[in-house]
Length: 184
Image 1 (cartoon, rainbow, N blue to C red):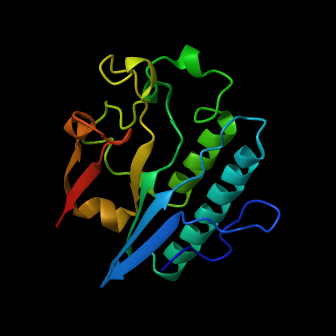
Image 2: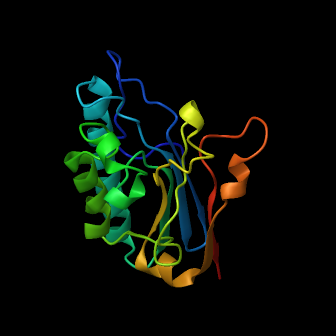
């Protein structure tokens, strides 16, 4: 599936951006996501981000209502640091996107419908993103903004998890690292 029902668009023509792709394999439903960044709290993209998250939560609730026992996972760059410890220095982020109360509330909405972070119980600490600027990676000044949120049925299948920090090393790496779970 490309996109989900009523996925918000952005701009005058409300263009839908390539931000969600889903696949279903038997009882396993996976979504690879890139949540809008938001840019700044005053930017129209911030409201777009909140609307996008709201609609994704509503779609996820519909999927779980249709099949409460499905193994559902939402994976990718959420562009939200739900906890203060998910950023290297909270004082540096006050008044910024990624840590606003509205974004954190939007993230919490997924837990309210039955999707939880399946990696944090196995790896409580660690970042998934480091800006290219100001030697953030060597200083470990990062953010944890990439997640795998899973239904209860999916969470029960998780046997291990890894934040693959070494992928950030070397020439030409992404500013994000893979977050991987193994399931049975």
